[in-house]
Image (cartoon, rainbow, N blue to C red; front, side, top):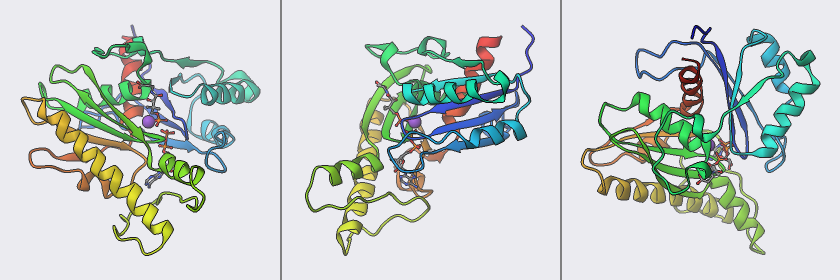
Length: 274
Ligand SMILES: Nc1ncnc2c1ncn2[C@@H]1O[C@H](COP(=O)(O)OP(=O)(O)O)[C@@H](O)[C@H]1O
Ligand SMILES: CC(C)(COP(=O)(O)O)[C@@H](O)C(=O)NCCC(=O)O
Ligand SMILES: [K+]
């Protein structure tokens, strides 16, 4: 079937909503489609619903009316907020969200309950499949509200993985479940914290950050133990630029690919349109 190729991919997580405009041109460098423009919708305060207001300007300035908005969501309130906003604005020009289900994703799913896997994990695996060397496995780490460490088999199937608390989520839990620990926000840019914190907040920052590094390294090593070939390791989501370097290991390299989930959503859409 002939189609225009242009699509807005939407990744609705439990903290933020990410959108990317894609045209049908994989980047020569990785084979991974790269967005021509992106916007991220965040809550005004952590833990609240996303403020979807900035969407209107982005759509009006960047996107031709009628371009499909294709959604992978792990948050029903997030999906509803987006639907409500689009229905109430722009005279319905953006009213057709195509909300993907797991069965739409062009990847074999080897888990016990394929329908329950977060569609963001599957979309990232689809993105990883286009990047990985033929017949090599991949490990995909996504830093978000949760951290996921997933395996894409050498044959290109989603094999499962691990889910652990995201750094911000763990910070909220420490504050909520203790008398003395303050609320600490993870670093937004750059720098890894010193491991020896000299005050309570810095000690928490250290523990959460280096704890996540150690946990993810252990999970990569354990996933890797079951593999014949060394994996390609891809990191995505909200994390510091240092993270990919810190996660590197003896026989694999780690690449940071911020738009892996969005690229997987766009690739899925093009496959569905074929
Ligand atoms: N630079 C950063 N380093 C570490 N954690 C971060 C950084 N930026 C954001 N976070 C944490 O990442 C989480 C949200 O990431 P996000 O990609 O918005 O999640 P989701 O995909 O679940 O919506 C929050 O817990 C936030 O505190
Ligand atoms: C693990 C997740 C919460 C990660 O979501 P995020 O951190 O991106 O908001 C999400 O993929 C999800 O809701 N998964 C459902 C359970 C599963 O994947 O098995
Ligand atoms: K995610």
